[in-house]
Image (tube, rainbow, N blue to C red; front, side, top):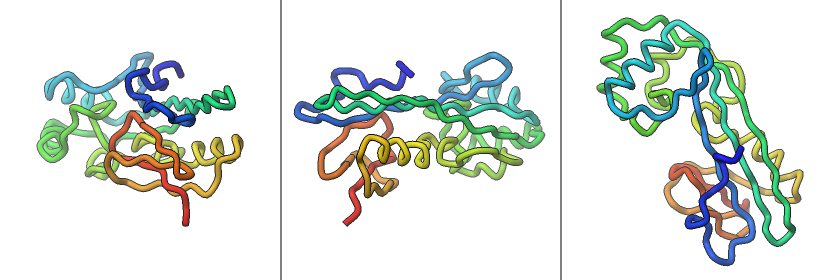
Length: 173
């Protein structure tokens, strides 16, 4: 879970609550993070073809004023279709994969790759919303709505800085 801890330089001054997250793909004893280039992305997809892998997201929630820290790791299983060379090349032409663990984003043409999933879809996308909401309730934070936006992170009207750019949390009106 330590990889989910935001770095000190990303914590805004005066913010008591924040969380970080980090997602990996795990298969056959190996971590598949973000590929270095398209050749490595091709290799990742070829290895995962026709097989089941785990998507693991470590989450750390900290409340500095209450000296609380909560952590969890969410797990989902993903079964890939059997992919041939043309399938992989077509996917890599359509989707920018260099910023994605395992070289794929289920939310971006995932139907081309994925046969089935077991577990929370949002975990595979990169933020396990269900488990995170339960954790917020456990520590007394409620009325949360998750939105897919950029760069604005709000929780009960206090700003958070997250490690992902495409999620934010907003207090319900």
